Image (cartoon, rainbow, N blue to C red):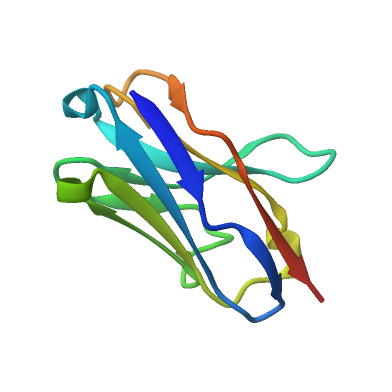
Length: 118
C-alpha cells in the first residue's frame, strides 16, 4: 500500500484546511486509515481514524467538534476536514494505513505541513 498526503498550508487561527490522502496498491487489504500529527519537539500523536469498509470513525478529544474524517472508497481517498484551527494544531500531518485492528499502522504517507498562525 502506498499513501500520498496533500493539502497542508498556512492558515490563520479559526480558519479551515482539508487534507487528502490517496491510497494505491493493495488497497483491498486496508482495514482502516488514520491521520497522525507531529509538532516540533513533540511525539507523534494520533488524530483520527476511519474504518475502510464500514466507515466508523474515531477522533481524539482535542479535535472533536472541529475535525472530520471521511473516505471515498471509489477514489481510494481519505480526507481530514479541519475547521476552527488553533495554533496548537500546527504540525506535520501524516496519513497511515493498517490491515487489521490489532496490527500497527505499517503504511505511511509523507507528511504535509499545517501551520496555524495566531
